[in-house]
Structure formats: structure tokens, C-alpha cells
Length: 170
Image 1 (cartoon, rainbow, N blue to C red):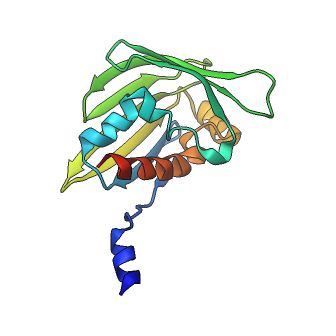
Image 2: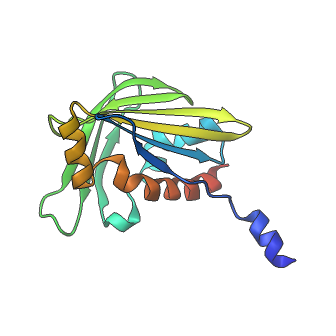
């Protein structure tokens, strides 16, 4: 009986799907067992975001982080990794911020980076999250997949970490 109780108390984990939707777009989908406003908070509150965004398996750590999560606001995340002498910076602008519903941002660290859109759709206390990365060309997406910088490499691990965080926030 104790095993059944433990199983019921453990949060149900949902799969992450990553698909190449077109020559220029990757789509990552996952359902989270939390309301949309809480999942959105984990994306838009910098202190929460830093707790799940970098997959532990990547060996990267935040050096600094800034985010003004509002339409027209900017972000800048700087990471270090033992294999690289110099820190890596990721930065851009928020094109659209609709609380508990949608975030759209640019990725401006190189000319070939994408525009990311994440939507949060709540149904029965769960949130369907869809992350779209739209690249400027087929080659840019191919290069991102090859380098591991697209959603294909980190999203499943990131979303596992987000699941673990959400359990503490619900």
C-alpha cells in the first residue's frame, strides 16, 4: 500500500516533444501540471528562471543575468563553462509579453539567430506550453541543430527541471 501512496504523491511527468515543423522552424511542446499563471511566472521571474533554464548536464552556470520582461524590454544572460575561456552571452528584446499567455523574444547574439515564441494554454489546471523557434533560413536552423543551440538539445532537460520547480510553486 505504501508504494501506491508514494506513486500517487509523485508528480506525473509529461513527455517533451521536439519537431522540425518546417525548413526554418523547431517546435517544442510539453504539458505541465500547473496553472498557466504559475508556468508563466517561472519564465518571467528572473530568480525562478535561473533555477531551471540551464540544464544541469550542460555544466554551465549563470555569471550574470538581467531581464526586463515586458514588451520592448531586453534581456542579457551570461554563462560560463569549464571548456570555454570566455563567458557566453545571450541577449535580445521582448517583442510581445502577454501575462500567462505568450512571450516573444529575439535572440541577437549572432546574425543567424531565431525569434522564439512560447505560448501557455491552460486546461483543467494543466498548461500546454508550445515553444517555437523561427530561424532566418534553413541553413541557420541546420547550423543551430548541429551545434546543439536549438531547442532540440536542451529543452527536454530544461523542462524536467521546470517540472521540479513547478511542484514547489503550486
